Image (cartoon, rainbow, N blue to C red):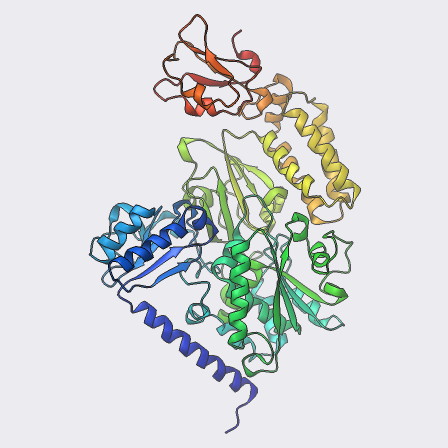
Length: 635
């Protein structure tokens, strides 16, 4: 019997899948399996040392247990993380594992039966001994779709991905017509997760119908937002999900070539993506006649030099072509005239990672998550003044309050919530009154912020909104390519005005000037960087204008953050002369003993307002205070 093209695809993939599942079952059948979170966040916390210690301890006791490097589970606050699966116990997750704890885990749990409960974060299943992750407050709000493999498979082993359902969506797509794949993505309502929120299916349809060959698919992994690490974590933890999404996109639009554009500052993401591409080629999942079909598609990885503006589509295309990464006027859009003037689909890492789930489970399944106009889930890098920092995935429509106080467990040290910066440096700062706002594209835009690529930085009562606006504007102004006048000069003028505010030298009329200038920059800038750069300032003036006015009228910083508006003072009655903690930490030698009294004094002319003296003062004395304005310091 002669097989049809569709039958060939199915039989070829089934053979690959059976082998991967067999190896996966062999792994799960081991006496014990140890997984170490070894993405960038884990490595920064010392995961590689823990990994070596575990292997050495296992060798020392002649234990033959697999030790696997996995990606980021999302619980970055608990790194380094180790997961141990052992018969008779649910998989147990251990937090903040150091070298000593690693040795104990091998001796007492792997070799013995003591699960070392004092180091446990939670269990990945039901247990009478260990709290289950399913019972954590955040479990009611999180729903992992594109993060489901992150932290649970070896990102450097393609068989782990395939055994957990990977590439089955590609197999399914190749048995459909390209138009049917595009229609499925359209019906799902998937909107681009890079920030703009444009319909992914519509973009694909435009590219497919556009004249010109060859066509290209580009994965935009140029993630440059301060405090954002979503795309990096996915490429480090589950790179094949992005590659599979690119393959499906390429098949749907009729492309033959693809590029993964990743900034060179992500060496681990670069390494694991390159390795994943080689593994996919070896199994004929990339290259000519994929899975025995008529579809041929290959992908190359391109390392960007780190310019924030290259996250903009036309600037990214220019960078890929070897030109300076500067944006160009649109239209034409890349979908009709992109790389080398040919039709090009450019999607974000997260957008492409969603594609395989939509094709595999159907558009109806995906559109049933989230809201009507913003279906699916949202992935955020939760950072700043929040207890549980890390990577989270929640359905669209979840509120800011639920993310910050339920998933993130609130503000540390009993401090009061002040604002949340959402959407990256070009996003907006939303106040406490916006905490019950639904997280979706339209609601955030109406509030003056934006979804952006998924950065979310929480601020507390110690943060000055004037300084926060200045900080983010300084970033975008520095990253401006300088091509258009509004962005190049307008943001510079705004930055100088904000700088005067942080020194107590602003005037009330400057607030109206700032607003007018910001609106002009939004209207006249060439690309998204310039058009959104004023957002932090505009939302600040909308929600925190009173803080600006106090700064101007009284010359003080209510949050005690602006260096030129604060001073440190030692309270004589509380200072213990024999304690030299503050003296030892002051790098500019601004603190000395009073020549006649039994306490220390701070030379205000030498003080650089670094705050190390305040943090070093023993709590039993609590002798150092921060004052604003500086004139409050007694002469």
